[in-house]
Image 1: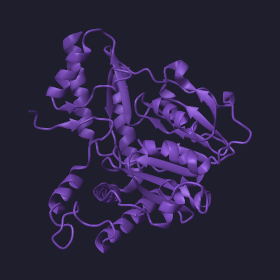
Image 2: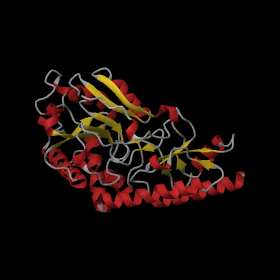
Image 3: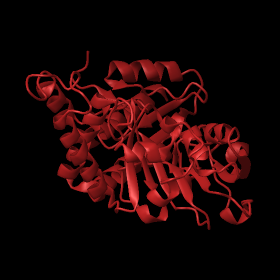
Image 4: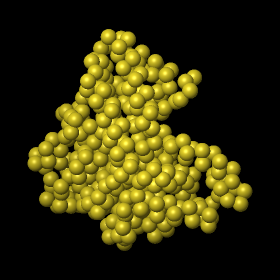
Length: 358
């Protein structure tokens, strides 16, 4: 077993070591001798923690009071339905298809609305995005939806699309990896298990005027305003997942906030892409304009070496580098908690593997 193990999985993903240490230290006694896994979501101790975690997230992202911040059970895929159910009003919605996750979101939206695909990158195998001047917008869309970063294909949209309707964005892979102009978005959601914590929690940031008193024909559990009115405690909250997210928010603040995260994340991605682009064995197929900072897929130029690479890299401590089952190849996911030394060590391994096999 290698001394250091680095988890390059796309999610659930690596956590900051200090956060894991805090969880371990406090696991048996969060309050009054009770574990965080035992206490009620309505206990005063947890309510205080939950309130502070929301304040910290608002501070990180500069979220003003015109937005609700919701901490909901489950994965982000549930938002593929909740968003159109709450915002579409059975009308027309515009979706940009740039990968597997935006495609799936569009498929779900079709159950609840009239779906318009403004552009579809499948012809490029989700390696590029067409120029916005060629997109086909509907005239009466209730909102425009895009996935900021496609984890499977490693494609990221770095510039906010310019549209005249409310913008909805799936930021499951990128929320809190850099500063964003929150006021340009009307709804953002993100599963926690990449940069924000562990599975079981999804965060929704939404303009209050889009949800308060709206979608009253839906059952309360499916309405954003019901969750807002009950401070994300309409039903039993995912206490432990929320707790971990709160610790991660504290850690990001301690690291210097989102500007510090952005500087580090851009550097990590640049190191890997620069090595790949200058190597003979490795290649990345995504248009450089749309390369992801956090999910870096790559393939080998020589057949027959992939399984060898995956076994040797795993044996060396670089875990979960296998690409998604639908696309194959390799993928290094380098979220906030991945330290820079893991990147330099991975590159050194890749270089040794290349030199040995060419």
